Length: 143
Image (cartoon, rainbow, N blue to C red; front, side, top):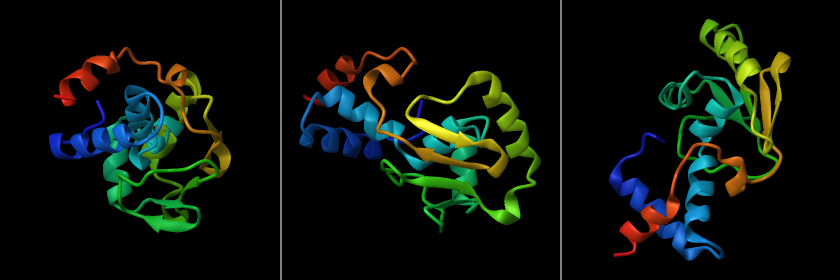
């Protein structure tokens, strides 16, 4: 779902295991707070893969700095903004129209006219809406 390969997924799992709390929830939180996923959830792209490519091309700034690494972990208070030279990009404006109907998760906040979004809080398990049994993933990778 997140468009990452097995090796990178294993590293996310190992990091989720090291953190305090439920491993499955930690894993989903780590995956949800990737920069490319946040760009998708804010509505700057129509898919996660499109958001990943847009990040790789340097179309966004994170806290005022240009970024091109999709796997950056965002934190509470981080601000993701479309760069000035990209603000009239037709793909982004079309994606924002779609997100107006779909909605933005509660842990994110968007300022659509300014093409800016921020992370209000880290996502909880209740914020992640797609059906996933993370316990099965934990059981598989714990072997």
